[in-house]
Length: 254
Image 1 (spheres, one colour):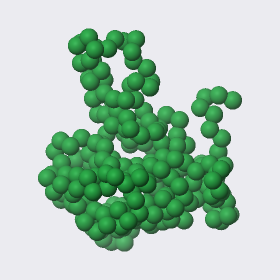
Image 2 (cartoon, helix red, strand yellow):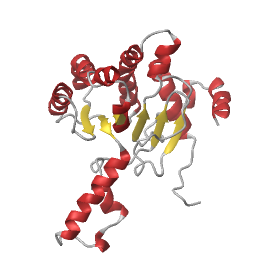
Image 3 (cartoon, one colour):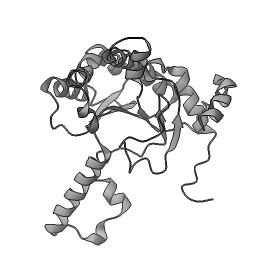
Image 4 (tube, helix red, strand yellow):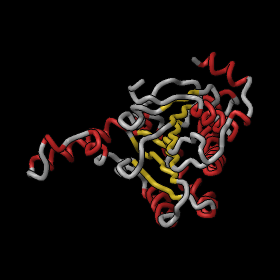
């Protein structure tokens, strides 16, 4: 699959992207930002150097997504499994939202971007919460691209929490089993206010979901690239959208 993509990539130009009002631009793009550690290792640097460089990519991608007309951009910033990493790396990762937003928040406000957070607030340090909550508050009235950070997020945890919430309502007599449908269940997820992703991008050559939006990605189009996240740029994002535009989404039909 990656070999086939590489051959197509060699012939890719920005002319392959359709940007008219009628074009098939994905409304919600989700990205698994992978490869920071490997990028650093290849350059003989500590892993945190990769995370620092990876942080710089975000604003480029936000700007390009906004330019193309993407409505929602979800970034997998820190997973529930990332707590297993070395303590120094975890601490650095949890400082990145504060560093990123400290620099980029004025630009996000200028671009009319609305910051959103999904994930468990449990165990997140105060400085991380403070930085994100400030960004959410200061962009609350913005009407442009929704920048949705998945922070301390895990899809299995999300689904289990949704099931518990539904179970409590059934026990309280506030709903019955017959009230449960795909649509109603979705309202108990952390993405209740958002449409499901149309396109998933994963960098670094890994081809798996890593406990990311398992329910929401059921009918999304996937695009994988060998490019490590710190090397990812606007051109790669445009490539992914161009590939998406050439696909036919049938949702199980013909």
